[in-house]
Amino acid sequence: MAGKTRAYVDTSALIAFTDRSDAHHPVFRRLFSEPPPLLTTALVVAEGHAWFLRRYDRTRALQFLAMLEDMTLLTVLSVGPKEQTAAADVLRRFSDQDLTLTDAVGLHVMATHRVQSCWSTDFHLGLTGVPLAINKG
Image (cartoon, rainbow, N blue to C red; front, top):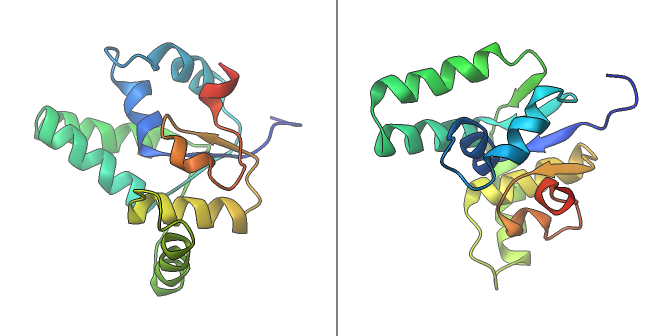
């Protein structure tokens, strides 16, 4: 793993990696095959779990959680009052964008942890200049 940059992982990347019907599945399958240390938040985990629960069923939602638990290079950050306040500032800064709280927390985390790559299909996560993995192919 030496020389690899830590990457922030958004819900869309986790869905694309897991769901073979997703147009970005090949890109994320390749990225997750030899990942650098990865960073995400509890909000991303909750969003992904909810997506699989709504789209499929409880079994797939639990399989999604189990997959994340097995990812030894994935660090899941808690989101508390400090992160929520910072995210509210991000939402005000980009009030012309349709950002979710999960997106805003992600943008804050990328800035505070000096993340240099974002695994997402959501262009909003590139608002602060962190390159998106899908732009690299």
